[in-house]
Image 1 (cartoon, helix red, strand yellow):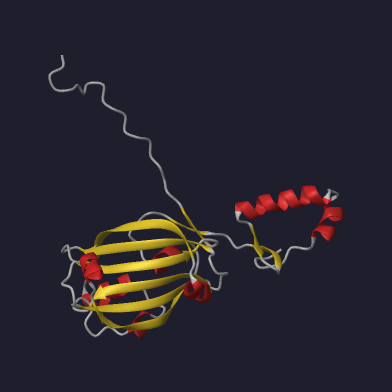
Image 2 (cartoon, one colour):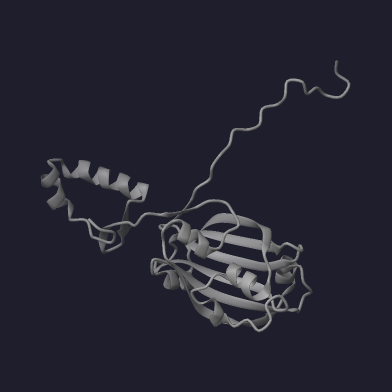
Length: 228
């Protein structure tokens, strides 16, 4: 079966596999929990697509998707300048009331909605930037190629959330679907903050991959001060 195909009803599958319907139901529930099947209320059970994994590194959405064999694309939903509120100014390390470029984009992988992203950049960092310039483009690549700015690093928080009405409509998922909320502040090599971005990723299409290293063992010759 292909991704998106509907699972046949239990009354058809149970005799086909020679098992009781209760046994089949438990097996289906387990596969749903594993994320290989997904339920749609009132419609049935469907084959789920593989989740796209992301490691913890400073990479753009476009670069992430390409590394994983997916085709990235973007669609600008809204763009324009606003004056920074005290809270936004603190995140961007600018003065309250300073102009900020705000761009809302739908991020897609293989033409399927993956995330809705709200990007905030100090307007002085990206003069004359039009929102349409970010259609099917990487912001980080644009920063480098047009403005000569390279990222040095950033701080990102990740937490579980559920989609609100607007996010559900954009991401084409039911209201209050599981999702990941990313908030990231990135800096250029000269130390200036160049972005604050808030992204909501579909929980049914996204996962994290983290390579863990064993904790560094304490050295046996390390002694507290004053000890023999």
